Amino acid sequence: MLLAIDIGNTNISFGIFKGNLILKTFDLPSKQYSFNKFCKKTGSSKITDILICSVVPKLTNLLAKDLKGISGQRPYVIGKDVQVPIQNCYRNPNQVGQDRLVNAYAGLIFYGAPLIVIDSGTAITFDVISKRRAYLGGLILPGLEISLAALNEKTALLPQIKLKYPQALIGRDTISSILSGVVIGAGALADALATRIKLKIGKNPRVIGTGGSIDLIKRYSSLKIKIDRNLTLKGLNFIYNHEIKNQDF
Image (cartoon, rainbow, N blue to C red):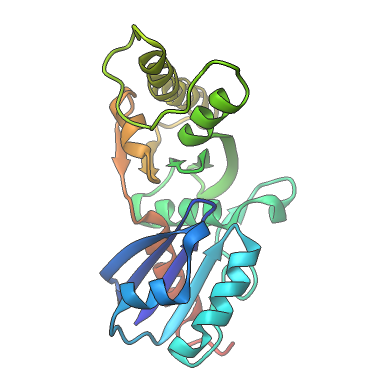
């Protein structure tokens, strides 16, 4: 069985796979990770291989060290031991986050091209795959939680509030005004950016959404967003089965 791990700035997502079947998924807050918490979540699962995708190098090293004994060998790391098998058109290919490449590749494999992948997590990213199945690049914006925190930290009077669904477009107090601005604004932004991207890549692309707050964007967007919460983990499993398994590393 494969343990697929997506290490992000806010959460670490874990998926246990047997072949193409997802047996279990769970998240741990990145700042609260511990090996004991991990073991409590995995229980008695018999892991034979581990594949890590990460945007937090310190956690990559920590988990690789912690988990080496689980499978009896060093975990594989995306970008180090195996490259995401997609044509990367970034000016400097090494600058692209590995999670973005995995999402783009997973979207391509499971949903076809052309494609826009929206990942709403710590940051909001738009990743674009052409009809020729190439990763063209994308956009990076502050995530919803970051936007709320910035308004509180950079102003004298605006409060820190919890992320949730706005009750109305036009807020009638400070909290509702912030929520409608950040959340409904993100939905409108997604519409506008997708419209411009479509003009660039031609044929009408599918839009796939993932990430912890993608529901909020979908609700306030006119886009037909297909949500796949396990897109990254599924992409890691596919890469393992086709690029790593039975290979001599």
